[in-house]
Image 1 (cartoon, rainbow, N blue to C red):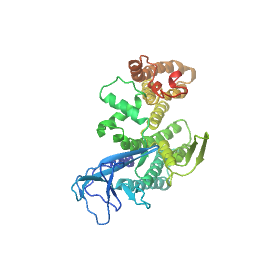
Image 2: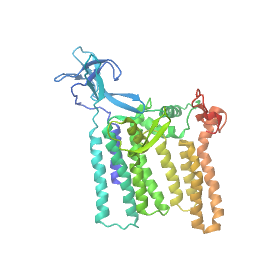
Image 3: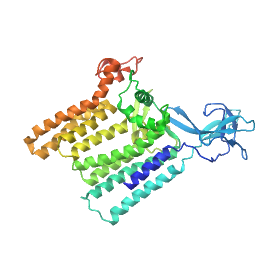
Image 4: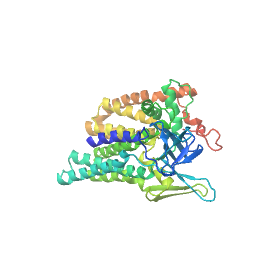
Length: 430
C-alpha cells in the first residue's frame, strides 16, 4: 500500500506538470507566437545565441484538438527586442522547409522528471513483489499471495501505460461527449437544473471534485487530472477488484492472476481498424509504438487513460459485485451494494443489464449461508431493502428527467442526433 500512496502523490504532481517553472530550456527553432496559441501568427524563431526575457514563470496552457487526439502546450510570455510581449512554447519545434513553403510545426514535448522516474518506480515495485514471492516462499493458499499477485497485475498496467504515454508525449484523447458531461457538472455547481441535459448525471457528479480542485472553466482545465486519476488509479484498482472478485468466486490464484494480467496488457496489443467507405472493420494484434495515432488512441480508451465514463462505471459495478460476494448475507450489505450499483447506473444507464448477474450472485451467497430453501425469507427481505436503496439513488436521475422532459423515464439521450436522417433514440428504447 505504501507504493500505492506514493504513486498517487507522484501522479497528481505529474498531472500538474503544466505549472510554472523558474527556468525553461529552449531549443533552437522554437517558435514565438503572437498569442498563447499555436494557431496564432508566428512572429519569430529562436536561433542559436538568441535572447528573450521571460516575463512570467507561470505558463498559459493551450490545447489543439484534432480527433482522435488533443495536445497541450505551455506558452510563456517573453519580450523581444521591440519590448512587445509574445509567447514562446518549448513544447513546439519549427521545421523549416524549402520552396517557400510555410514552416512545419512539430511537437517538441519532453516529459517532466516525475513522468521520467515513474517507469523505474513501477519496475522496482514489480521487482520487489517478485523478490518477496520468490525468497519468502509464500504459500499459494495464503491471502498475502493473492494480494501480491493482484498488485503485480495492477502495477504492470501502470508500467506499460506510463511507457506508452511517455512515448507519445503530450497527446491525450480528444474531447467528444466529455464537453456535454462537463456542462452538466458546471450547471449542477451553479444550481442550474433547467437543462435540458443530453446525458445522465453520474459522470458529471464524478467531475465535480476535479472542477472544484482546479477552478475549471472548460473541460480541458480538468482533462489531465481526470486522465491520470482514471488511468493510474481507477483502472488499476478495478484490476485488483476484479482479481478479488474472482477469488471470492473460488477461482484459483494463478487463474485469477492470468486473467488479470491479460486484462492489464490487452489495451496495448489488441486493436481494430475502421474502413467506413468499404464497411470493413478488422481486429488485429499489434503494439502501440511508432507514430500511429489511432492505435495510441485506442490504447488510451481501453486502458482508462481518458475522461469518459467507461472506467469509473466498470469500477463501481465490480465494487458492487465484490460487496455481495465478500460480505455476510445481511440487509446492510445488500443496501451498500445497491447504493453503489445505483451510482453505477447513474454513470452509465446500461449498467442495469448487470442486475440479473448481481441478483444471481446474491442468491448464491444467501443459499450458501442459509442452507438451501431457508434462504428465501431473508433473501427477499434483503432484496426489498436493496431495491428501495437503489431507487433512492437512481431517483436523482428520474427527478431530473421529470423536471426537464416532463417524464421520469425520458432520458437526455433523446436529444442526440436531432438532425440524423436514420433511426433516432427517441423512436425507441434509449
